[in-house]
Image (cartoon, rainbow, N blue to C red):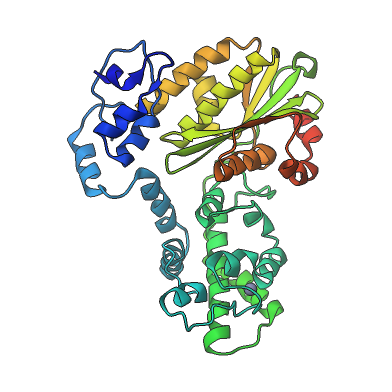
Length: 399
Ligand SMILES: [Zn+2]
């Protein structure tokens, strides 16, 4: 029985038993599932949303045996870019970490100088060359695309995924940010190769003009407009006492949570960070809401407005949509029951840039394994708190 794997006193997984029976990878997968002691044992198939076996899903699972789903969807995003095949191929090289930057070459041949050919100041890593180097950041800024690299990303693939957010940037038009970013990355690499192999001198003005031209030539404007704007809450300002920004971050079964509680006028009352294991993005966002609800009860707050930038979750909760993986469903059911025990609460969606403080907190929690509560806020958030107009964001939530 599955319950033989539980600790009955606190409904947690019995780690000693798990590790004695399963491989380390499988233990991580098992621990990312939520325990429900009220349900009977049932055999579920991991490769379909409803948990039922199909031959097609078995075939797909067999073909992709060594690839985890997160990776598959990541590479799909690379190959589906709206730009020339040579640019897609470059982006594939970029994220496969096989671009021959000097720090990689030095790894194989210690005699090679790993210096950045642009600034000659730092080691040439992919992150340095394309994001941190003065020349690179000058290019992004001159093209008014600094928002594509300004997210304080530790991983370039996190940065890339953020380019698929429909609500990125302040442009009133639908912009194909992922392809724009891809063309800029490719142009920086072309410039770098010209400097290294053709010994050209960098002329930033003409470089930027060339990139602008490439952007006009290569980018296909998306035809369908599926821009979802922020949902207005049809409740008066006076009926909400606290606004709670939540964000769950997810990477390879690791989840982290950021929660920021504000008074309705926008000043911060408290912050909370946590981390753990989980199996999907939606489950991470749901887990974040569950923790936020329980914190609200501990703090004895009522009339709260939860704010999330996960549109899928907000639709699942508010519109009862159920197109969701069976493992996440357990989280959602738990969330629904804890949500209703929060007096007078609602959940709304905001654009990702409005949830920047919480996003920074969740990211930090993941990188430093933080589990903590601050009253009102930790020192490492001060810069982003200074940059984000919280009062305005809170005000704009109301009609
Ligand atoms: Zn440099």
